Image (cartoon, protein in one colour):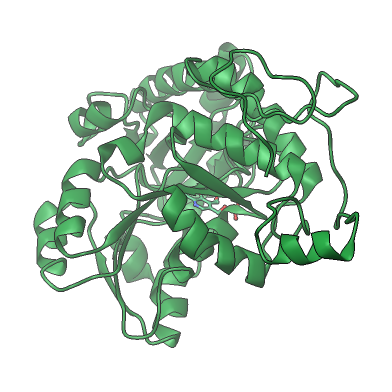
Length: 410
Ligand SMILES: Cc1ncc(COP(=O)(O)O)c(C=O)c1O
């Protein structure tokens, strides 16, 4: 599409993509993928265009025959979106990436682009509500067999993967129970069954966990979360090999159209520039707040993968660099106790979103996971007293004071 400069550390002028060879993550998040126009702008340009023009009918013919790679239509490629895709691929150290309009569009495309009637999918049961809906409700309508297992249980994976399987889907840490799946072990078992492994890495982010290095084949993100990080834009991304993206994913996206808008791609590019700084503070504050919550009499349990008290702490720390920005805890008194706590918060906002600069609390049983049966919620460990806290960028003392005063209302 656009010529890449060869291993240079500076973005070559005018229409050449900067390459991130040799750069560390923080630098890749700022310079990766830049396509600088002849105007030599510092910030990435927003190409708000749906189409592109051709010098001649022959050029249009060549573009559609794919003999002259170039931008053709923004449903399938756009320079601002491409900058985001390249930057994400460089950050994840993936061969290729394709952006989508939301995280769910990324999840659905990653699955549907490779599945057909008669195929089989094995998935961990602890999933974000909409992912659970796609796996358990939508895929079976198309004649795809789906099997849900307790993602923490390697024997359950082993048993489910004795049959030939097309895809394995999982989330680690899971939303909201912060359950951890042994990525390397499950990838091994999945490959033995002929399955490609898709990891929803939203809670870990590309900075804390790199599933491709642990054996996964595809990584998906809701870029709406930490990647934007400021609650402004929906977006998603799928990362994998060049071959998979070119042969399976790109045709699916091109012809079904869940495209990321160039405006949102630009916001996500800007979000990436501060991801490491934001996440570093969020992880550190989340750990402190999890310790604080664990000591409060009105709280039954506080879960945080970065603390020894988490039942899978060792595994979490083997595959993650830090515990993340989310803390999940159970307030005494079930739903009434949790609601009293949420309603008494003065600073922390009630919202089903996460990964924002603003700290947000969610009551999963009545919101993100409301649609599940009580039994399915119980299988995921989601109780009526469970609260998910997404730690933002506020002053730590203000957050601790707000939690403490709200617990008095429980
Ligand atoms: C783990 C996980 N995956 C996927 C999604 C879906 O992302 P989006 O809301 O961008 O569609 C979410 C949203 O909360 C999530 O938490």
